[in-house]
Image 1: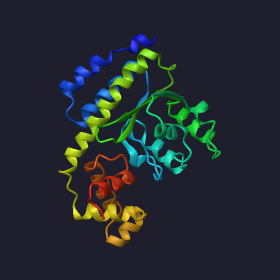
Image 2: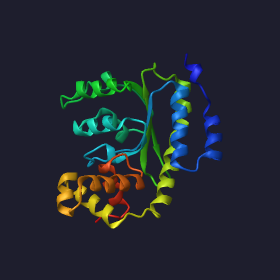
Image 3: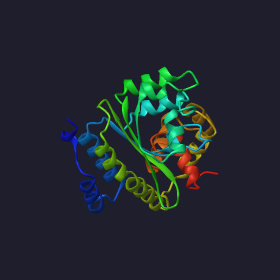
Image 4: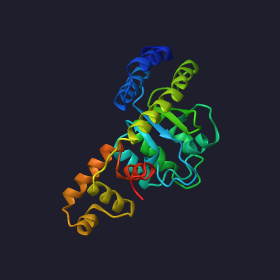
Length: 242
């Protein structure tokens, strides 16, 4: 059954070298891997630090639904996550099962975490730790409902993790130099970083709530973020916010 979705890492590397010049190209290739291996979604992240208080700001690229990321952060599942802890401690690839992997949680949220992944059809999959030449650590993951990857498939996908992680970081480093936010976009992101809602921002800035959301959405797109929380984090790292 797995052979139906099988492709060699060399095939992907050949395509990578000749066609991938943007994050859209990377996302398209990851979507192709998802289809070929019978998964449902992919995730590319920076490994969250010990001080990270949310997961979304560490996401580089993903096909996870927005509401799944929001629910994950709202439930505080980053704290005590066995997967994130393992990524911090080891560079070896590993498979996961949402139910079995979350059982060791000591925060009482094992059932919540397992149910979230089950609901979105990402109950089983694998994580492939990655790093770049500067020592930044990340991970590429795939999830779905298929059986565990066999050793050959694990080796194929593991061979791509560093390459994909490094390419996305380099694309973002080059693009960051050209990101330009308007005064209003910066104002809205600044107030968002202070925890203000769109309604509160509209009162502070004398704008409609619709206009505030327009500025926030535009800034989020410019920064290639998945939501305003990640947009704030990226703007701070890029030196666009104090």
